[in-house]
Image 1: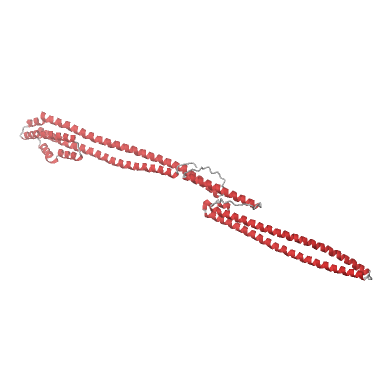
Image 2: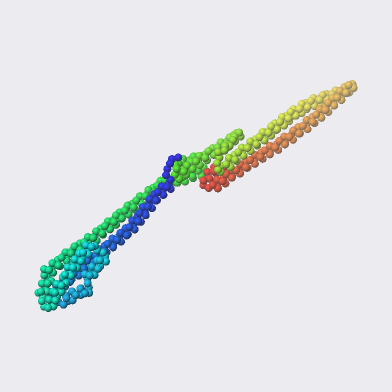
Length: 440
């Protein structure tokens, strides 16, 4: 038998691969969701870092602008705004605290410290400028806030601001880019996993169609033909070690066995019909065919016994017929002798009537002839009794022949009962036993 992988094993492998791919896809989805959340958090963190960095820097710029505006105009509003920022709003301090809560590097913290130090160095100059304004020394105040020392500090702060924003943006952008690449890679792997699952399922569908559905349909059609009694229908499927292949081998074996049984039964019955009772039923019947084998043996034995009785009875009838023929021949001979004696008697009586005066010797002869005639009549009576006995023997033989015919009718009835039992067994076996009805 040709070796082949089991359909169940191959289906299990394909489905297992599909399940693994789906599990990988599910894990990829979880990873994608996690990284996507991290990406959203990174974007939010980038926004918060930029916002709070700008808050810190804008606070410093706001103080510079307000002190310069107060120095230039002497407006109390700018003075109040300056100290409101220092004492109440505190955007610089709040921005730095928020940046530290979000998380910044040592280099970034160093740049914040440098900017804070420079900003703190400007405080005495700003306070002197505002004090001069209040004392009416506008020009001196302007010299403080627009002087070289103040401007250099502002320029250094601006450079640090740009470097700080660039470092924050570069770090945030790098993390976002890394997370974006991870999400793109996961999406790519998810697409590959989906395509792989689709290919596996397509292969599984083609495999089931080619290796399971088509053979099952062919097996169904073949079983329908077997149920109709058509055992010679072509069945092209070849057997192998797979489940379907073993099922195909079972069907081929079933057809061979049924064909063998039917051919054997047909041969046995045909020879019985031709009068050949010198037969022997083999011992290779299996399963539900054993009762048929036993029934054929019983039928063959019954026919042989009946024929034996018929032969014996025929021999007896032949013997009785021969005896009857012999007795009939004897009766015919006796009748001829009686006829001859009667003719002789008639002749003697005629002579007696013509010759009344015959001698006593002639009378004695006539008396002897009469006695002979009487003897012949008695012998004829005995022959008739033998004929009657022979006819009675023939009647008894006819009665025995009637009993033999009754025995043959009983055997025929038993044969019909066996056929009916085979039909019942075929019906009990269901679809698989429909072919047994042919045997029945």
